[in-house]
Length: 242
Ligand SMILES: NC(=O)c1ccc[n+]([C@@H]2O[C@H](COP(=O)([O-])OP(=O)(O)OC[C@H]3O[C@@H](n4cnc5c(N)ncnc54)[C@H](OP(=O)(O)O)[C@@H]3O)[C@@H](O)[C@H]2O)c1
Image (cartoon, rainbow, N blue to C red):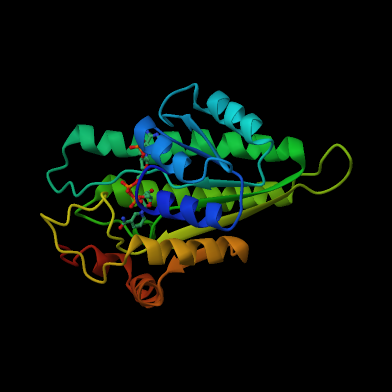
């Protein structure tokens, strides 16, 4: 999901190169077609808008087209700087990153619940670790995504199937730092430690293959997150971010 651009597109390309059968989706059909034409034997596509109520049914039909699903990868998301707290920007971010995210992750969970096992991998962000003044809804929605995946991981472990076996759904929460994709407006803002999407996608695929529960990309951001976590709330609220 989110294979038309940025990290989602790069991850899809790597998985296809590795021989996976893929069902790719997002809103822009032209981009989906372009990617499909690179691997016509391995890729099926479906236009899906995760903000729409028919998205879970469309995901089901895509799963049917490719003959089943072992991994659901969620790379769809939006985000903006919004120091002006422009309401429609804040709400749009919530709609995609919270409502759309929940809708699709739940759809994948229900599919794997019926199947008995599976793997759900999502791109959230390091932005979910703390509230970020320049991007309030972005950081808050990413925090939601982190917590939601944790909740589902706990729920899955405690779910006993009709055949008496435990439900085995793996979860991978991928939390990159800044990545040079269309999501960032590099003409207006400076982003330190900016990473190339191709390189980040390779690390994402490695984390998925190793079935890591959480993957902060890369090591510099692991250090940054460690330091951020040590800062108490009253001090954090006095930090000035650009
Ligand atoms: N870039 C960064 O620095 C960074 C850092 C950490 C985390 N992330 C997160 O990584 C994820 C991917 O972002 P990216 O940087 O690769 O950005 P991107 O290049 O802008 O890609 C975003 C993807 O999300 C899809 N999308 C957006 N709204 C959608 C909707 N309503 N329905 C279906 N698909 C939708 C887009 O496809 P369509 O427009 O075709 O629908 C596109 O494929 C996002 O969740 C982002 O928050 C990004």
